[in-house]
Image (cartoon, rainbow, N blue to C red; front, side):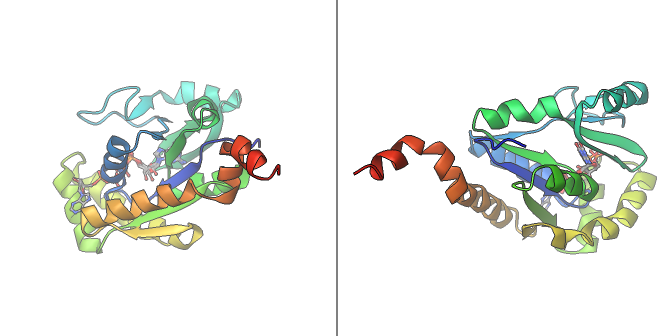
Amino acid sequence: MDKHKGNLFILSAPSGAGKSTLYKALLSQDSQVRISISHTTRAARTGEEHGREYYFTDVEDFLDMIAEDAFFEHAQVFDNYYGTSKASIFTMLEDGLDVILEIDWQGARQVRQLYPDAMGIFILPPSLASLEERLRGRGTDADDVIQRRMSKAVNEMSHYDEYDFVIVNDDFDTALSQLQSIFTAMRSKTTVMKEKNTILINDLLSL
Ligand code: GDP
Ligand code: ADP
Ligand code: 5GP
């Protein structure tokens, strides 16, 4: 896969750990970051909009996209399909923007294979009790959905050590500043600076 100017980040967490709240806060403060909008076959929640949180599609269209090789990665999570289309990320990376994939651990594994430079960040809740409290407090999921998400949470969290960074989302502002630091640091990586500052580096080394 070609080297792009922007960095690719994978953000994973058990449902309810706070990853959407965190990335939305990051996006509002950092104009160089974009979120990839996934396709999903799950129903839209109240307040969610087609083309903003997700592209909501039916199973037939999703399977057509798989057949057309339109996905960078896709996975089945909680009985629904979720996938990142190639179109949704490569233009932004070519434009030098940092792109966040909010995907599960299965998708993360596929992305690491395809794009080894991707940086993985895993968000942990401060406890199982607060995870359940946040899922309930969000008010978007029915009781049986919350129970299923809780029982999947331990499985999702058991993959935390496949990621480059781990953030415990206890105090929100602390977690947000840790997330911001990771994005800032990645922009100073030598491989990234080499791509972005070719003229300066050639100039400095030309004497
Ligand atoms: P949330 O966990 O409450 O944010 O619920 P969502 O319905 O937004 O996400 C459900 C699961 O699907 C999570 O584990 C996400 O990480 C995962 N997910 C979302 N988008 C993608 C995607 O494009 N690819 C993959 N592989 N997983 C995704
Ligand atoms: P996810 O996207 O991981 O499923 P959300 O971002 O939807 O999780 O967060 C779940 C709920 O927890 C939301 O109601 C959110 O406002 C709340 N929340 C997020 N971070 C914190 C935090 N540090 N302390 C308390 N509540 C939080
Ligand atoms: P929710 O249904 O609560 O929006 O998301 C459930 C899970 O699906 C989350 O853990 C989320 O990260 C994951 N998910 C969302 N979009 C994608 C995607 O495009 N690909 C994969 N693999 N997982 C996704």
